[in-house]
Amino acid sequence: MKIVVLDGHTENPGDLSWAELEKLGNVTVYDFSEPAEACARMINAEIVLTNKTVITREMIESHPHLRMIGVLATGFNVVDTVAAAERHIPVCNVPSYATDAVAQYTFALLLELCHRVGAHNQAVQEGRWTQGREFCFWDYPQIELSGKTMGLIGYGRIGKAVERIARAFDMTVLHTTPSGREGSVSLDEVLRQSDVISLHCPLTKENRHLISHETIAKMKPGVLLINTGRGPLVDEAALREALLNGHVAGAAMDVTEQEPIPADSPLLGLDNCLITPHIAWAAKEARQRLMNTVVENVRAFLQGSPVNVVNGVLETRP
Image (cartoon, rainbow, N blue to C red):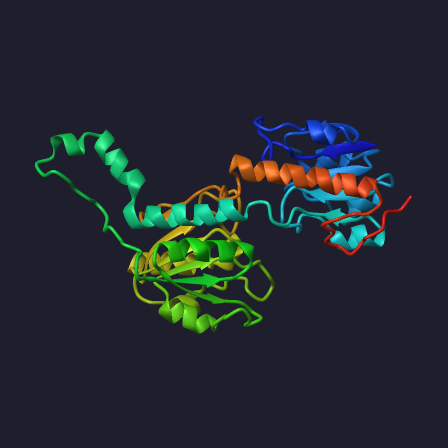
């Protein structure tokens, strides 16, 4: 069984092992693959695993040996799942490996907005405390979370994990979901009542630019915004305007509308906007869970019963 990993470096930059996957077939791992390289590297592969390398209809149709596609992530929009289904090829993802890591990172971003630990450390390293006349100083307002309201847009596994942490900080928590179930309130209520808004919903055609001029206007003045979900949920030009005029006091974004972030992004260069390079998921423990699930996905496929299938192909073809 020929197994090809098109872009394994992000999942495993060298601190994990591919050994368990290698027990299941003849494995070739590429760190990265450009589109033209990917097509060539898929030749004769029966199982192809990808993280962000796009697998198009043309690529699927031009590789007759292909029998399974595995995504090294939860999101699977990099694969033409319809084309795969038409050829009876299951597409399998990893649904819930990073729940705790992303929830923890959400609060890392929030606490950084509240205290600017990095900036104050840098000031001390540069000698400002040594040279100062007072026993302490702060360059940014210090914010206490106890008693404040956190609004969650999206209430899946990660949203629920964030809620548990927020309640440990003695915060009130509101959440909104399209279904309106599980104690959900309206989006407008979350926007109006929340001191902190955190995004945890999947990206759909309907909620692209959910955070816009219109929805920002409904938020409390001085609100804090966290996005560890999907970059296109936020209209970045609208957010920039709100950050500059102070209606949004601070934002922390682990995802952006275009990734990697372009040099002309409207969010760059703002003192009250923290940006990290899509790493909320990347704790070693989370990546090991991802690796374990990928191996189980391949093993289940080889046994004739695919799991974590996202395109409805639940039986393998000869």
